[in-house]
Amino acid sequence: MKTLSTVRRHRNTKRIRRTASLFALLAVALSALVLIPSCRRKPADEEPGPAESPISSGSGGTEYQIRGTVEDASMNTLVLAAEDGGTYRFAIGEAEITDCGNGLLVGETATVVYRGRLDPGRTEQTVQPVEVVRVVLTASGGTAAASGTTGTASAVGPTAAPPAGTQATTAPGLPGSSGARVEAILAGMTWEEKVGQMFIARCPSADAVRKAADNHLGGYILFGRDFSGKTKAQVIQAIQSYQDASEIPLLIGVDEEGGTVNRVSLYPEFRTEPFPSPQELYRLGGFDAVRSDAVEKCRLLKGLGINLNLAPVCDVSVNPEDFMYGRTFGKDAGQTARYVETVVRAMKEQGMGCVLKHFPGYGNNEDTHTGVAYDHRPYETFAASDFLPFQAGIDAGADIVLVSHNIVRCMDSLYPASLSPRVHEILREELGFDGVIVTDELAMDGIRDFVDAEQAAVLAVQAGNDLLCCTDFEAQIPAVLRAVEDGVISKKQIDRSVRRILELKLSLGLLS
Image (cartoon, rainbow, N blue to C red; front, side, top):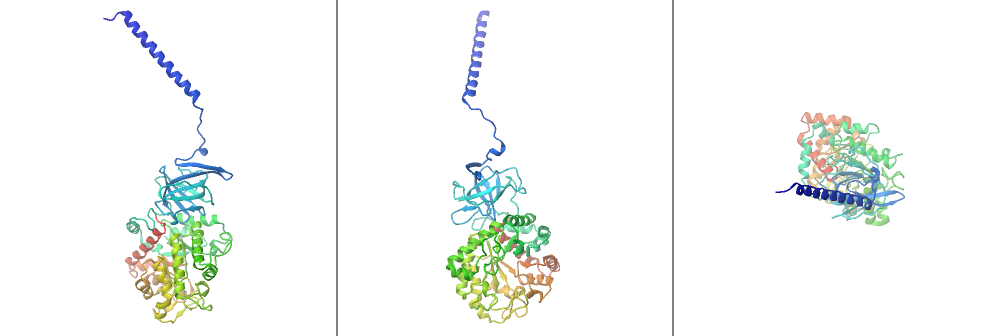
């Protein structure tokens, strides 16, 4: 039995132990204050984002890098799924890109080096001025070194969908259910949207943003007026505004052939001198110069947001008196075929859409810009010569073939080639082309003198064109819709054409 004095001694002992413990804790706290340096929370503009880290500081400002997986490599943008779970969209412009020779491919690990700060909270509509210095691609990661030119970037929230104009997660050469994705998009489209996709229009001088959206256009073609007096930044902004307005990203095309036909390099803001003609290139450096020129064109155009160059010219001409001679390679069919193959392969490697023109071969015909032209040559001439460069381009993977307005009597004595079912049948069955077929500009006199604008569009679709290159789209789209409603044009044919267009856009990295 415990006595009162025993209980008191026990209580005193517990008090002493508790006091000792308190003193021990106080000592630890005091030592922590002495040993740990004082710290403060850095202002937001000093703190790296979740997955970014500073790598250097110089006169241009602190450079940061962020690492992740490429989700988009289209046009002048790069979508990066960062290691923090966020997704960031960079407008890389002409920033230096270091890769393994295959260009930007979805699924690769990339490190983006930039100046400025990312804001993960910003939406895809809010552009953030981050200057991209360099993009380094590696198979399993790597470290970036800062150098190169600059661009702009915008942050996309972790769950936000990529903006219009960005690339799908499946790119050319990578596995994926692209067919199923195209079918899903097609199934969700109205007939107005489908028909609109079949028109690639001359970019209007006014209300281009609204017209692209209202008419569900498949694309715009830019001409000299769209670059004259503009800076690179202004052109990039204009193109992006067209893309932002379009539910399905646009094909943005130009005719940058070199020589007498240049839309972009004609102006010093974009290149110190215009790109030379194919003939001049070959004289200067053979096929190596041809390839280098094609690569440079692709990089310049992609940096502006252009994804389609209406080149190369495949027409065979060795006579300086021919209307088309100055735009051609100027050599026989065999050499021209090699030229076409070289250009197409370079463009495909750079992810640039290409257009073979002007099927079935222009020969020595007159200018269809100014009137109807008749071609009286026998079919054997086409089979032995004119078809060869087109076949070489098709075999190299060309995306689009453009059909001329010449009336080729040996194929169809009644209709211009662009409106002739027989000419399209030859292209599909005899040359084996299964890509997109586009008309030459339907506003040319070679068509206007033959038929009115609305009927021209209907005939062009009936002939087998998938895309209609035009100026009068606001009249022609309703005309084609009426033809579909009346059963003059079958809905199956519209679906076939739109499917090809969507597959092309997917292959160019435009669909997300």
